[in-house]
Image (cartoon, rainbow, N blue to C red; front, side, top):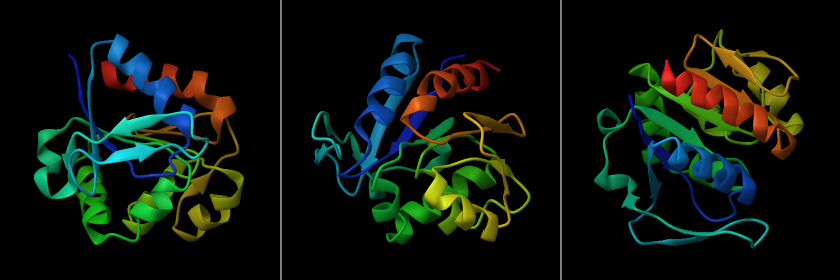
Length: 172
């Protein structure tokens, strides 16, 4: 079954943490919808290598329309967590038990949504203490899968394992 993937992103996302998984998810037949503050917004990666145009604005979508939530890292998740609309969307996706894929700083949105208590997760080294304070069980591993629906990785070096586990979770 092919998944509809909500990608929450704004400027300063970590280029390869979006482009490499997105390419593989598309190749596997999944449909990605990039969601930012408004549709048609041109988003620039932190490294300046990737430019992505948002498909939808956060006010134009509902969590029920998607099967999967994907949050790439970089500065983007920290920016998004300051916007209550993105936090509410994330919280509802987790409440609905949707598959959730986060890498690097992506878990910052999960921290703000207060959905990590008792969950197993990893993230970029600098946010691992924040994840612990949010009640998560934190592992310093290239990929952590929790409950069969939450996939997390630490940094760009972990992308191959992240993609493999994410595709496996989406296919289950």
